[in-house]
Structures are given as structure tokens and as C-alpha cells.
Image 1 (cartoon, helix red, strand yellow):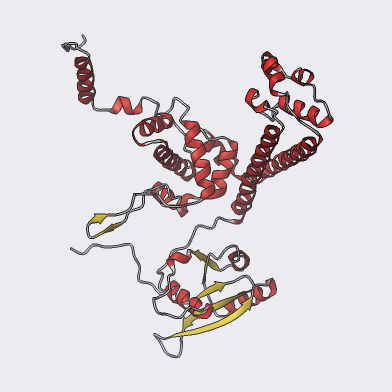
Image 2 (cartoon, one colour; image 1 turned 45 degrees about the horizontal axis):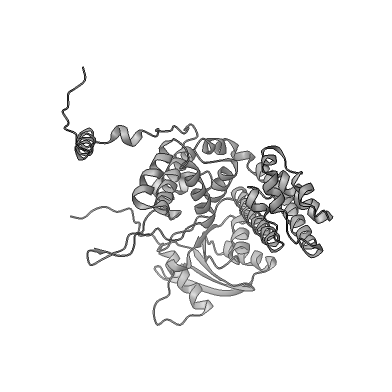
Length: 422
């Protein structure tokens, strides 16, 4: 029985493809031959990747009536051409190089790669990658840079702890946060030349003062001027990065202003804070028309198991593959935070973690979070409503639960008789 599919056999009439390098690119254009219907004309030219040359290429494409321009995602070299052609009003597609494999035995040159990409593109045998609009791209630059800054600050803090260990200063054993108010004050005093453990321990604040004897022991070491010099540089570096993070946060807040309502709806999800909401919007945008269903979004983010089947046998481990690392990181953080809550997501994490481990639970909860995000962003009127931690328990088969309880009591040596309550 023949079934109707969604595939459309349509040739893109006027299309161009770019094989991009750092200094130059090869542009292949294919258009109809008006003199000979059914035939195609082809032009292949090399352009510099400088702005003036790219503008000249855009004018040439416009003169030929090109409607769609396709290019491979080659490092970051695709961005200048993509952004310029986008500004000129072309429909620009960025495609994954894995989807444009060359034929075996075909010579591989920049020119031939551009021609092959153009032929594949005109027959619509490829699909575009998700490239967000300019406002989201700027927000993405900020949120990703913030992630890098936080990582740098963490690395510098680790260096501080290693330096103190080298000087036999065991402050991190007693103080939970080495860079808290008390820890910073003690390290500043060490840099200033104070070495007496008793006077240093008296700088403890609040509940830490109960640990003054332990602090005196921890601050007894062989800290010298060499350590003081390095510690001063490291702490200055940490403070500089923290100042940069604060400035970036302010910039993110300003860039997020047009999407503040969407961010507020995302914050309703357990485990999602302001930073996580900004990162989510930066990675997937707010227009869910790009993802027809929540499953499309989960598949794009690689939070869905891959399907590999051959000769009727399923192969592989069912792993999800590698998706957007920045989105995966924030979804993992949300899943771990939600696991500590008495909510549906928290109970879902705990149920799966007991049976299949924490890693699979993180992926499962991350997919659930993506589904919630899709619905919240697809419908501006939607708001998050928690199903409750007892969602699974209230919907589990009553007879099965009854049998489980009876068997557990009988295993303990009881004889069970059931009687319905009035």
C-alpha cells in the first residue's frame, strides 16, 4: 500500500554554494538555462573572505537571481559570509559537513566540493542547521563567555588551594568556602605578612568562630614571601575575573530585556535560575517554530537516544550522541538541582537513578525539562504547573501495589487478610 510522505521533489531554481576557507572561498552558482529548457548553467569563482570581496560576491549573486545560499560549517570561518549574505536578504543555510559526504572515488578539491554541495542543495537533499537571529546570537556570545569566565575563576581558585597546601596551610579542611569573607580576610593577612596562627584565626566570622582551635592548627605552616607573592597574584586574578563576570551579568540582563517574559516563565521550572534561563534562551531562542514538536527539540539537543538498525537488529548502545555542550551543561545542572526538590522532576530523577544510575537519570530529566521549555516558549500564555512528587505513585496500578505490599509482609512472616474500608 502506497503512503503519502512529506517529501517534496522540488528543484531550487537558483542556488549557490560556498566552500569556505580562512582567506578565500569558492562559490558555485547553478541557474536555469533559459535558452535550453531543462538544462542548467553553472559558474564557479573564487573570492577573498575580506568584506569588500564578499560584498561583490553578494551583488553578483543578486544579479543572477539567487535565492538560497548554502555553506558548510567550517570552524568560525563561515560567520563573515553568513552574516553578510543574511544582511543582503538571502536565504542562507548553514549545513553540517557530515551531511554532505563526497562520492567515493571523486577527486576532492575546493572547486569540486563547492559544485557537489550546490548540486546536493538544489535537490534539497540537505537540511539547515539552527542559526539563531542576531539578538539571540549576541546573548549567546555573552552567556558562553560567562561560562568560560566562571571556569577560569574556578581554575584559579584551585591553584590557590594547591599553593596553600604547598605551604602546609590546611585552611580548606576547616573552612567550607575558601573564598568566603573569613577565608579572604585570612589570605589577605597572610599576603600582608602576618604569620601568627592565633591572630589569623581570630579573623573568623559568624559560626566559623566555633572552629578557632581547628583554624589555629590549620594556619600553622611554613608560609613565606614566595607563597605570599604567588597568592597575591592569584587572588588578584580571581577578583578581576569576578569583576568581569559581574559586568557580563549586567550586559546579559540588558540583552535579555526583550525576552524577560519568556525567561520569567522558564524560572518557574524547578532548578532553573536567572543564569540558567538566560543560557537556555541563548542556545535555543524563543521561536519554537524552528522545532515543530518537543521531540524535534530533544533530538536537536541530542537528549534522545539514537536509533541504529540493520538486518532487523538494533545496534549500538542507544547513546544520545554529542549535541550542544553549553545547553547540555545547563540541563545537567537543572536536573541535579531539581533532584533535591520534592517535585515531579525530583521524583523522576530519583526513580530512574535507583534503577539505571545517575547519568541516565540526568539525561531523562533533561529531556523532560526540554519538553517543558518547548511548551512554555511555544505558548506565551502557558505557565509551569508541577505534577507533584506523588504523580507516579497515584497512577501506578493499584492491584500491583497491593500484591507488592502483601508479598513484603508475608516475607516478614505475617498472614495478610484484606478488608475494604467502609
